[in-house]
Length: 320
Image (cartoon, rainbow, N blue to C red; front, top):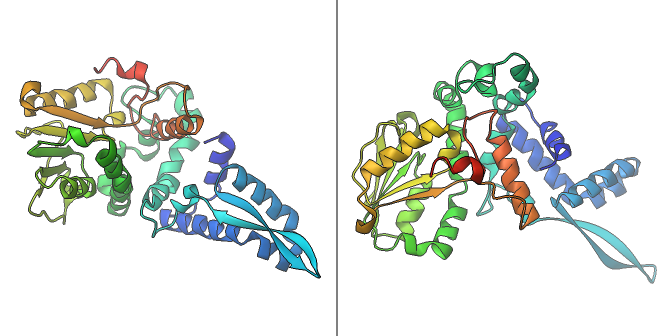
Protein backbone atom coordinates (compact mmCIF):
# COMPACT_ATOMS: atom_id res chain seq x y z
CA UNK A 1 0.00 0.00 0.00
CA UNK A 2 1.39 3.40 -0.96
CA UNK A 3 1.74 6.31 1.45
CA UNK A 4 -1.17 7.96 -0.36
CA UNK A 5 -3.30 4.87 0.18
CA UNK A 6 -2.28 4.76 3.84
CA UNK A 7 -3.21 8.40 4.29
CA UNK A 8 -6.57 7.73 2.70
CA UNK A 9 -7.15 4.80 5.05
CA UNK A 10 -6.26 6.95 8.07
CA UNK A 11 -8.85 9.50 7.03
CA UNK A 12 -11.54 6.88 7.58
CA UNK A 13 -10.67 6.28 11.23
CA UNK A 14 -13.44 7.05 13.73
CA UNK A 15 -13.72 6.73 17.47
CA UNK A 16 -14.15 2.96 17.34
CA UNK A 17 -13.35 0.11 14.92
CA UNK A 18 -16.99 -0.77 14.24
CA UNK A 19 -17.82 2.79 13.21
CA UNK A 20 -14.69 2.94 11.06
CA UNK A 21 -15.73 -0.22 9.25
CA UNK A 22 -19.29 1.02 8.77
CA UNK A 23 -17.93 4.22 7.22
CA UNK A 24 -15.72 2.19 4.90
CA UNK A 25 -18.61 -0.08 3.95
CA UNK A 26 -20.77 2.97 3.27
CA UNK A 27 -18.09 4.38 0.99
CA UNK A 28 -17.92 1.13 -0.97
CA UNK A 29 -21.68 1.18 -1.42
CA UNK A 30 -21.39 4.80 -2.47
CA UNK A 31 -18.74 4.05 -5.08
CA UNK A 32 -20.85 1.31 -6.65
CA UNK A 33 -23.60 3.88 -7.27
CA UNK A 34 -21.44 6.77 -8.41
CA UNK A 35 -23.16 7.20 -11.75
CA UNK A 36 -26.63 7.64 -10.24
CA UNK A 37 -25.29 9.99 -7.59
CA UNK A 38 -23.71 12.19 -10.24
CA UNK A 39 -27.00 12.46 -12.08
CA UNK A 40 -28.86 13.54 -8.94
CA UNK A 41 -26.11 15.81 -7.64
CA UNK A 42 -24.37 17.12 -10.71
CA UNK A 43 -22.51 19.73 -8.69
CA UNK A 44 -20.40 16.93 -7.19
CA UNK A 45 -19.40 15.48 -10.54
CA UNK A 46 -15.79 16.64 -10.46
CA UNK A 47 -15.27 15.44 -6.91
CA UNK A 48 -16.87 12.08 -7.59
CA UNK A 49 -14.79 11.59 -10.71
CA UNK A 50 -11.68 12.02 -8.57
CA UNK A 51 -12.95 9.29 -6.27
CA UNK A 52 -13.68 7.12 -9.27
CA UNK A 53 -10.18 7.41 -10.69
CA UNK A 54 -8.57 6.74 -7.32
CA UNK A 55 -10.61 3.67 -6.47
CA UNK A 56 -10.39 2.23 -9.97
CA UNK A 57 -6.61 2.69 -9.83
CA UNK A 58 -6.41 0.98 -6.42
CA UNK A 59 -8.61 -1.90 -7.65
CA UNK A 60 -11.46 -1.27 -5.22
CA UNK A 61 -13.99 -0.79 -8.00
CA UNK A 62 -14.17 -1.68 -11.69
CA UNK A 63 -15.37 0.78 -14.26
CA UNK A 64 -17.62 -0.67 -16.93
CA UNK A 65 -19.20 0.93 -19.96
CA UNK A 66 -22.33 -0.30 -21.67
CA UNK A 67 -24.21 1.01 -24.64
CA UNK A 68 -27.70 2.34 -24.08
CA UNK A 69 -30.19 3.59 -26.64
CA UNK A 70 -31.25 7.18 -26.22
CA UNK A 71 -33.41 8.89 -28.82
CA UNK A 72 -32.51 6.27 -31.40
CA UNK A 73 -28.81 6.90 -30.79
CA UNK A 74 -26.35 4.73 -28.93
CA UNK A 75 -24.77 6.31 -25.89
CA UNK A 76 -22.18 4.80 -23.56
CA UNK A 77 -23.09 4.73 -19.89
CA UNK A 78 -20.63 4.17 -17.07
CA UNK A 79 -21.16 1.72 -14.26
CA UNK A 80 -19.13 0.52 -11.30
CA UNK A 81 -18.78 -2.90 -9.73
CA UNK A 82 -17.03 -4.12 -6.61
CA UNK A 83 -13.85 -6.12 -7.20
CA UNK A 84 -12.64 -9.27 -5.40
CA UNK A 85 -10.52 -6.94 -3.25
CA UNK A 86 -13.41 -4.77 -2.07
CA UNK A 87 -15.64 -7.81 -1.58
CA UNK A 88 -13.31 -8.83 1.23
CA UNK A 89 -14.87 -5.92 3.13
CA UNK A 90 -18.38 -7.39 2.97
CA UNK A 91 -19.48 -9.26 6.08
CA UNK A 92 -21.30 -12.03 4.23
CA UNK A 93 -18.45 -12.91 1.87
CA UNK A 94 -16.89 -16.37 2.50
CA UNK A 95 -13.39 -14.85 2.74
CA UNK A 96 -14.44 -11.66 4.53
CA UNK A 97 -11.64 -9.76 6.30
CA UNK A 98 -13.93 -7.33 8.11
CA UNK A 99 -12.54 -7.97 11.63
CA UNK A 100 -8.99 -7.48 10.32
CA UNK A 101 -9.92 -4.12 8.80
CA UNK A 102 -11.64 -3.08 12.02
CA UNK A 103 -8.48 -3.79 13.99
CA UNK A 104 -6.31 -1.95 11.48
CA UNK A 105 -8.51 1.15 11.80
CA UNK A 106 -8.85 1.03 15.58
CA UNK A 107 -7.54 4.25 17.21
CA UNK A 108 -5.29 2.33 19.60
CA UNK A 109 -3.59 0.78 16.55
CA UNK A 110 -3.28 4.07 14.68
CA UNK A 111 -1.90 6.09 17.60
CA UNK A 112 1.59 4.49 17.52
CA UNK A 113 2.07 5.71 13.95
CA UNK A 114 1.58 9.27 15.16
CA UNK A 115 4.44 9.07 17.65
CA UNK A 116 7.19 7.51 15.53
CA UNK A 117 9.10 10.80 15.31
CA UNK A 118 9.00 11.29 19.07
CA UNK A 119 9.89 7.65 19.61
CA UNK A 120 13.05 7.99 17.54
CA UNK A 121 14.07 11.43 18.84
CA UNK A 122 13.63 10.55 22.51
CA UNK A 123 15.74 7.42 22.23
CA UNK A 124 12.83 5.19 23.19
CA UNK A 125 13.59 2.77 20.36
CA UNK A 126 15.23 0.18 22.57
CA UNK A 127 14.89 -3.57 22.15
CA UNK A 128 12.28 -3.63 24.91
CA UNK A 129 10.07 -0.70 23.88
CA UNK A 130 7.88 -0.36 20.81
CA UNK A 131 5.93 2.75 19.74
CA UNK A 132 2.77 0.94 20.88
CA UNK A 133 4.27 0.45 24.33
CA UNK A 134 5.47 4.05 24.44
CA UNK A 135 1.99 5.38 23.65
CA UNK A 136 -0.11 3.02 25.77
CA UNK A 137 2.33 2.36 28.59
CA UNK A 138 2.41 -1.41 28.14
CA UNK A 139 3.19 -4.03 25.45
CA UNK A 140 0.49 -4.94 22.97
CA UNK A 141 -0.55 -8.27 24.49
CA UNK A 142 -0.72 -6.84 28.01
CA UNK A 143 -2.88 -4.03 26.67
CA UNK A 144 -5.28 -6.47 25.00
CA UNK A 145 -5.70 -8.37 28.29
CA UNK A 146 -6.92 -5.18 29.98
CA UNK A 147 -9.26 -4.26 27.11
CA UNK A 148 -11.76 -7.15 26.66
CA UNK A 149 -13.61 -5.51 23.77
CA UNK A 150 -10.44 -4.95 21.78
CA UNK A 151 -9.14 -8.39 22.76
CA UNK A 152 -12.29 -9.99 21.32
CA UNK A 153 -11.98 -8.00 18.09
CA UNK A 154 -8.29 -8.86 17.78
CA UNK A 155 -9.01 -12.57 18.19
CA UNK A 156 -11.68 -12.37 15.49
CA UNK A 157 -9.21 -10.59 13.21
CA UNK A 158 -6.59 -13.28 13.73
CA UNK A 159 -9.04 -16.04 12.82
CA UNK A 160 -10.91 -14.45 9.91
CA UNK A 161 -8.43 -15.76 7.33
CA UNK A 162 -8.92 -19.38 8.44
CA UNK A 163 -11.08 -20.30 5.40
CA UNK A 164 -8.38 -19.03 3.03
CA UNK A 165 -5.53 -20.72 4.91
CA UNK A 166 -7.45 -24.00 5.06
CA UNK A 167 -8.15 -23.92 1.33
CA UNK A 168 -4.43 -23.43 0.63
CA UNK A 169 -3.48 -26.25 3.01
CA UNK A 170 -6.02 -28.59 1.45
CA UNK A 171 -4.94 -27.84 -2.10
CA UNK A 172 -1.17 -27.48 -1.80
CA UNK A 173 -0.02 -28.92 1.55
CA UNK A 174 -2.28 -31.88 2.18
CA UNK A 175 0.64 -34.29 2.31
CA UNK A 176 2.09 -32.51 5.35
CA UNK A 177 -0.98 -33.46 7.39
CA UNK A 178 -1.64 -36.98 6.15
CA UNK A 179 -0.90 -39.68 8.70
CA UNK A 180 -0.78 -37.29 11.65
CA UNK A 181 -2.54 -38.19 14.87
CA UNK A 182 -2.13 -35.05 16.99
CA UNK A 183 -1.52 -31.35 16.45
CA UNK A 184 -1.20 -28.36 18.76
CA UNK A 185 -2.01 -24.91 17.37
CA UNK A 186 0.12 -22.56 19.47
CA UNK A 187 -1.52 -19.17 19.81
CA UNK A 188 -4.51 -20.66 18.03
CA UNK A 189 -6.97 -18.05 19.26
CA UNK A 190 -10.56 -19.22 19.42
CA UNK A 191 -9.76 -22.31 17.36
CA UNK A 192 -11.24 -21.34 14.00
CA UNK A 193 -8.29 -22.69 12.03
CA UNK A 194 -7.92 -25.80 14.19
CA UNK A 195 -11.60 -26.60 13.64
CA UNK A 196 -11.15 -26.24 9.89
CA UNK A 197 -8.12 -28.53 9.98
CA UNK A 198 -10.00 -31.08 12.09
CA UNK A 199 -12.91 -31.04 9.65
CA UNK A 200 -10.55 -31.57 6.71
CA UNK A 201 -8.39 -34.19 8.45
CA UNK A 202 -10.73 -35.92 10.95
CA UNK A 203 -8.02 -38.39 12.00
CA UNK A 204 -6.08 -35.55 13.69
CA UNK A 205 -6.75 -34.69 17.32
CA UNK A 206 -6.26 -30.92 17.52
CA UNK A 207 -5.40 -28.90 20.62
CA UNK A 208 -5.78 -25.12 20.68
CA UNK A 209 -3.25 -23.54 23.03
CA UNK A 210 -3.62 -19.87 23.97
CA UNK A 211 -3.96 -17.46 26.89
CA UNK A 212 -6.86 -17.96 29.32
CA UNK A 213 -8.65 -14.75 28.30
CA UNK A 214 -8.48 -15.79 24.64
CA UNK A 215 -10.07 -19.23 24.91
CA UNK A 216 -12.49 -18.33 27.69
CA UNK A 217 -15.92 -19.64 26.77
CA UNK A 218 -14.64 -21.84 23.93
CA UNK A 219 -16.08 -25.35 23.91
CA UNK A 220 -14.21 -28.39 22.68
CA UNK A 221 -15.56 -31.24 20.58
CA UNK A 222 -14.68 -34.80 19.61
CA UNK A 223 -11.28 -33.89 18.16
CA UNK A 224 -10.83 -30.30 19.42
CA UNK A 225 -9.43 -29.53 22.88
CA UNK A 226 -8.68 -26.13 24.41
CA UNK A 227 -5.74 -25.64 26.76
CA UNK A 228 -4.76 -22.34 28.36
CA UNK A 229 -1.22 -21.36 29.19
CA UNK A 230 1.96 -19.52 28.26
CA UNK A 231 3.63 -20.44 24.95
CA UNK A 232 7.01 -19.97 26.58
CA UNK A 233 6.20 -22.61 29.20
CA UNK A 234 4.03 -25.18 27.42
CA UNK A 235 5.15 -28.81 27.38
CA UNK A 236 2.73 -30.98 25.38
CA UNK A 237 3.56 -34.32 23.78
CA UNK A 238 2.38 -34.10 20.19
CA UNK A 239 3.23 -35.06 16.61
CA UNK A 240 3.08 -31.56 15.17
CA UNK A 241 3.33 -28.00 16.45
CA UNK A 242 1.46 -25.44 14.34
CA UNK A 243 2.62 -21.81 14.43
CA UNK A 244 0.52 -19.46 12.32
CA UNK A 245 1.33 -15.75 12.51
CA UNK A 246 3.28 -16.15 15.74
CA UNK A 247 7.02 -15.72 15.19
CA UNK A 248 6.81 -12.33 13.46
CA UNK A 249 5.54 -10.85 16.74
CA UNK A 250 8.64 -11.70 18.73
CA UNK A 251 12.35 -10.91 18.95
CA UNK A 252 15.00 -13.40 17.84
CA UNK A 253 15.63 -14.41 21.44
CA UNK A 254 11.95 -15.07 22.12
CA UNK A 255 11.52 -16.95 18.83
CA UNK A 256 14.40 -19.24 19.77
CA UNK A 257 12.74 -19.93 23.13
CA UNK A 258 9.47 -20.82 21.39
CA UNK A 259 11.18 -23.07 18.85
CA UNK A 260 13.16 -24.85 21.56
CA UNK A 261 9.92 -25.59 23.42
CA UNK A 262 8.53 -26.97 20.15
CA UNK A 263 11.58 -29.20 19.76
CA UNK A 264 11.04 -30.59 23.25
CA UNK A 265 7.38 -31.35 22.57
CA UNK A 266 7.61 -33.30 19.30
CA UNK A 267 9.24 -36.64 18.45
CA UNK A 268 12.27 -36.83 16.19
CA UNK A 269 11.81 -36.17 12.49
CA UNK A 270 12.07 -39.87 11.59
CA UNK A 271 9.08 -40.56 13.84
CA UNK A 272 6.93 -37.87 12.23
CA UNK A 273 7.70 -34.91 14.47
CA UNK A 274 7.54 -31.54 12.76
CA UNK A 275 6.88 -27.84 13.26
CA UNK A 276 4.65 -26.18 10.64
CA UNK A 277 5.12 -22.41 10.37
CA UNK A 278 2.85 -20.07 8.43
CA UNK A 279 4.01 -16.48 8.54
CA UNK A 280 4.83 -13.34 6.58
CA UNK A 281 8.26 -13.34 4.92
CA UNK A 282 9.70 -10.79 2.50
CA UNK A 283 11.48 -12.76 -0.22
CA UNK A 284 12.70 -9.75 -2.21
CA UNK A 285 11.02 -7.77 -4.96
CA UNK A 286 11.18 -10.46 -7.64
CA UNK A 287 7.95 -11.98 -8.85
CA UNK A 288 4.41 -10.68 -8.50
CA UNK A 289 4.44 -6.98 -7.62
CA UNK A 290 1.01 -6.98 -6.00
CA UNK A 291 1.88 -9.96 -3.81
CA UNK A 292 5.11 -8.29 -2.70
CA UNK A 293 3.34 -5.00 -1.99
CA UNK A 294 0.70 -6.77 0.09
CA UNK A 295 3.32 -8.66 2.10
CA UNK A 296 5.42 -5.53 2.53
CA UNK A 297 2.44 -3.58 3.84
CA UNK A 298 1.54 -6.39 6.23
CA UNK A 299 5.10 -6.57 7.52
CA UNK A 300 5.31 -2.80 7.93
CA UNK A 301 2.00 -2.52 9.76
CA UNK A 302 2.72 -5.50 11.99
CA UNK A 303 6.33 -4.42 12.44
CA UNK A 304 8.15 -2.10 14.78
CA UNK A 305 5.18 0.05 15.89
CA UNK A 306 3.66 -3.00 17.60
CA UNK A 307 6.10 -5.89 17.88
CA UNK A 308 9.79 -6.69 18.02
CA UNK A 309 9.74 -9.34 15.31
CA UNK A 310 11.54 -9.61 11.98
CA UNK A 311 10.15 -10.41 8.55
CA UNK A 312 12.81 -10.74 5.85
CA UNK A 313 14.63 -13.92 4.82
CA UNK A 314 17.94 -12.28 5.74
CA UNK A 315 16.67 -11.41 9.22
CA UNK A 316 15.16 -14.84 9.69
CA UNK A 317 18.29 -16.83 8.85
CA UNK A 318 19.57 -16.32 12.38
CA UNK A 319 16.61 -18.34 13.68
CA UNK A 320 16.99 -21.38 11.43
